[in-house]
Length: 327
Image (tube, rainbow, N blue to C red; front, side, top):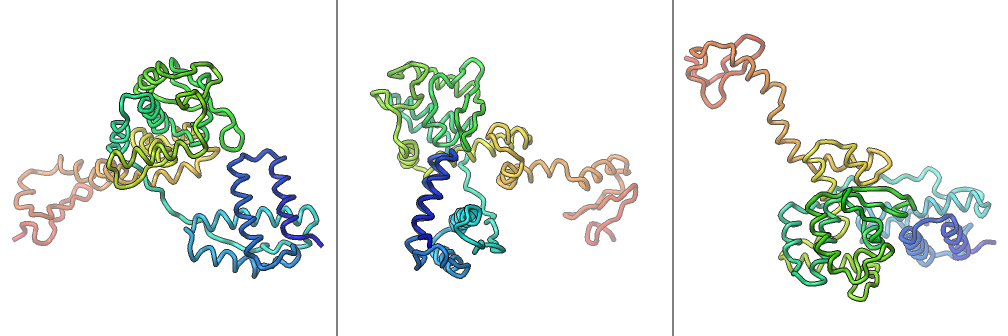
């Protein structure tokens, strides 16, 4: 009879051997240990659909839907592994479904990012933090990618960042602009250990920032800048994506810069750029275009007396709306 804690330990060991990232492994550890302690049983074969549903229901009472869905995904992966390795004869989550919450992240405004940059004084830490904000907002690098970035990964002349072992242990490239390159030159001139293998963002002694160091820096600067809401590293990634989409309308460019495997993940940024889409639509409305086109062919005398509603032009005919000057 396999105990639940033993199965969890074996699963985690297998995930580590499979090469999942440390961030993913921490999520597995936390989620499965929480389930193991709160499931009410220590025997794997006694884990039923009802127990899992009760656990997820308890989480929903005090957690965001997206966090509950993450727990659902981890438990589903664990149960499938238990069946595959013969520890369970049937999957207790077979047929169990949970919708992915369609929530949209909050995206900093241009002025928020500008105020963050201005909150960095002209000191060692200030130059480092300004370069950190600029690169995160320009390239959309993730927190761990920023923390593990090495000097040799930067190509200032080509405006390219080489990402080593990013999410999913995948290498890739992303880009930045002239403004960020200029900020970086100022920072690298003050860097205490400018070698190829040195961390780009470091302490005064050249050591890497801690796991949560970047988040703490950004939260502290958000407060100093007087922002209504704290801005973290992932918020700057969202900013990079939406800013690119607003300026180019090129969803595939957003996908490539953020290094998503498909357009599905990048598509959510379309909703975040709705204000810009609405503004562009006002210039491209099919019926507005038709009205302007027809207005050029209509005798000006026919438009006299058009009130607030005006004329609705269809084809080459003029239909005067009620109250629009018809007598």
